[in-house]
Image (cartoon, rainbow, N blue to C red; front, side):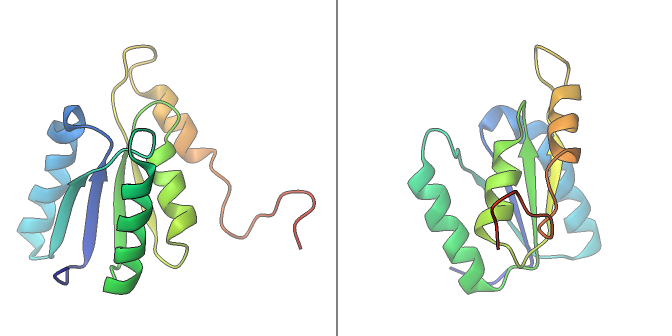
Length: 118
């Protein structure tokens, strides 16, 4: 795996149009990145493997497309806890992406703890 600063991930190629804007911005800024399509629903093992590669590679930021319940940024925030994860809301048929936005902003911070945690 080659070195890059930012990982851009999305759950489906239908998210590519939105996520390409991120890549264009990073290109303009001269920031290295890798773009991947991963599904934590359809291929959770591949997502876990990629998260481990990101930890080993020393990636600095993860930008994750978030449709509906925003599983992709949430899972990667849990799997790569030392790296900031930026969730990008993706337009959905049901609520036009507002559901994605709400899911992102309601994610607990890494410092919050559920009942029963140490």
